[in-house]
Length: 515
Image (cartoon, rainbow, N blue to C red; front, side, top):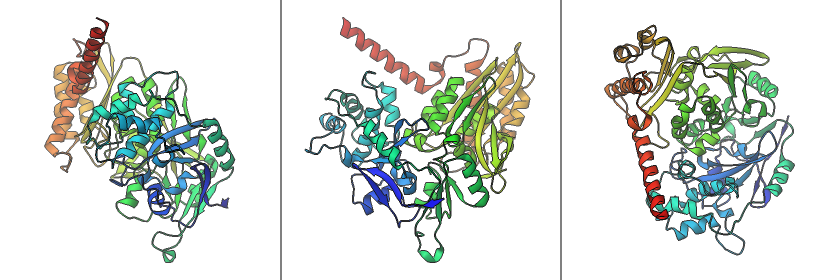
């Protein structure tokens, strides 16, 4: 193991940084150290998108990936071996605007301008990742790309129009081959350790940032530093620093361990490595369980899903983590490792209390195993929050029934936001098991939820509201999956109804054009 400065590609050269705290954010470095103030600070918690930048990195196969992320909660050492692009990088040397910027100008997509650089960088990521022969991105793809940019003072229409119009100008593409060669030249071939000054001064010690490359090296470091904070995308831990001003101590970065980013399938199990991004994890889960499509789209934002990991969401143990209800309902398991010892634990035995887990000292989550879809499975997830995009759930529920010959052979129901941990509804499950899936059974299970949960009241929802929503979610599940005339999604979801209206309007407009 050797100590290095932080090295990353920036504005045509390899940029080196030393002597800054390991928890200094990318946004702080841009604005305060480099005086590149195009990237803005809004919320400092990864919500508003004013700080959006694009990170370029090589995946396990050596291919270049460009991802929009939030600079305000990304720690600077995580840039090592990667490339950083900000709004200052887009304008040409002669002052000409990039097509993304020109489209925002021509479509009047900016009002006060504070949020515009973040929008531009999200759009640039979409622009660069859209193959030249693939045509225009769909409205859904544009909405997903902009889901992490919350400001809408100009309205949705001109910004969406700009995201479409940016492809009308002469194409200006990044030299991906040259960037790939540069990243290959600065790629580490051993564990990267960075030690900078403590944020409060040397008297408090100098925490280290460890970034191993292999799972064995990661396990060895975890055993040697059992109290080190494991960090992936810092989508939660980053707020401990920016909002709570906490010292993290030593940091163990999981983002360079290629083996923990793998996603594999066999006949029985989908195995998702703990370092696989949320976006990659949900893409894999949705292949087996397309019912997860809406939860996938509504889980945080695209920049957060690019940075965060499914393993981190599970290990964090938050009572409002949206992944856990679905995983609990699907009977997922956590693969835990300490040094060379590996054990598997059912996810519903993993949580022992509020943000407490069954992890032993020196142990870490290595993977999540999810059973492949079984025959006769009826599965749904529902998220209820005050905002469609990128909001914390008041209630998130998941329902999985195995029905054979008209009888519920097995029932698994789980909720987030209803208890101190993501938790199964055992009394409601008991009311369902062995019964016919009819209205009377559904209503018995709805009543049983009051025994399973005594939800809290907070700023997102009252206890009574949460319980009512949970019961209504179960009723909706019945309406969608009952044997007798199940209702289609468009009849039970306001969002599906809106999408259907958009589709109808587009079809009508297209018909008028033809006529």
